[in-house]
Length: 84
View 1 (cartoon, rainbow, N blue to C red):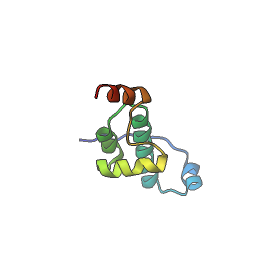
View 2: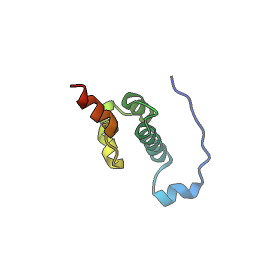
View 3: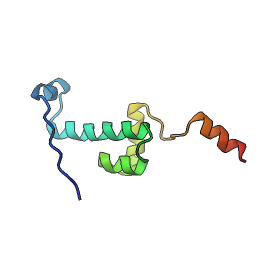
View 4: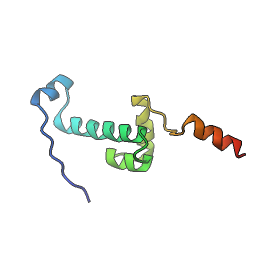
């Protein structure tokens, strides 16, 4: 199931970005999903679902935004290593 969300975007935004509305909507979904994933709010699986991609496609797309697919802090990595 999906919900339709209506956004009022100035028409000039599409010409400035050289995007069709459908392409703009897809990129907006991906950008939001990447940011929420980067912030640790959602999982890769949920982010991929929001973006309308497979998990593998989403992980590949993270590179376009310079976001690591690994969401561990230095402290978490050190703690994990110290338990071995």
